[in-house]
Length: 467
Image (tube, rainbow, N blue to C red; front, side, top):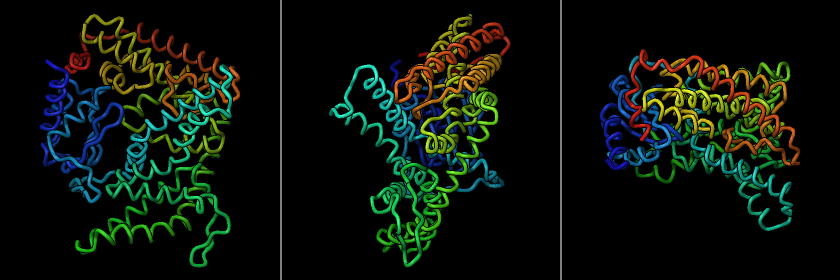
């Protein structure tokens, strides 16, 4: 059977299990997950959905259903879109789940994860381009005045300078309002007469000087407020004038409030947040990174790993490097890959062997969700190995003060991002040491604990994933 036909059948099975076209209002995807906004989550048959060949896992929170597919998720996503009208409308409203109230913290983490997840490709491209520049300038004598340097530098710098635009777009879409207005708010904050402006005022009210290109908190708060204003007028304006006055009223109210109150507040929150996190790290660096290294598989399982990005950006804004999140996730990602590879090489069943090896390779390259859902949590014992390897690697990270110099998914593919701009190799060699230790420990523990294939629940989707 052709791969396209297989993915279409998978998409059809998923749609049927979540309640059909009428129960799905929006569809999107990240690296490994098909994300569906559901009108009535109570009709989802999670047991049946998890048993579909090709589905590695399912996470349902409120009105969002995340179906873990793996690296082929984009193919399944496009097949899914062809099955119905799932356009992301700015006026989409969800039916609340009867009797269900999601805790505020869960809503907040879900908002952050859903906002940052679509932006990750931009961060990876920008971060790795910075690593390429470091290598070219320090080891190949590329002149910083050359056109080649200028082009690559633009790719690197634009990804982070214009981050409020990307975040604004993604956050607005997550909140079900016009995403382009969210991007518009980001461009306003970065405009030359606003960003870092001194002596600015509005109706006689002084505006605090804020540099918006170095923080994400102001645009997050701004889009949250904008969503309230947008939805307020969306419900009350007559349709005949809504097209003109809805965006106008939204922006003329939102922008002054953001500049006067929310922007400076977000900047202050971000500053103290970074100081607080970095202060906790300084109290016990090995312990802090150990926690990140050991806990990351659980964050990935619950879809909350991307919620750490505000912490990451806050640290980067203050230090221009990160010795906590990226360092801890380096050991975690390598450990997931090592544990999955051990399973793949030791397994007797062909399906388990194929999936173990494939998810092990993707884990070493920084994509751990297939391994987390396909191997670690179904088999349990490899999860123990990944946690032990991530914790031990994180402990060494903390002792060696390993730091990441680009915002990427840390892995073998991005290990060069641990080389600082000045080209000194000490930090890079330390990162390599952490990588080796994490892999050896996780692989060794997984090998010793074994796969327990015959007594665990059969992984019905493994054959499909291995295709």
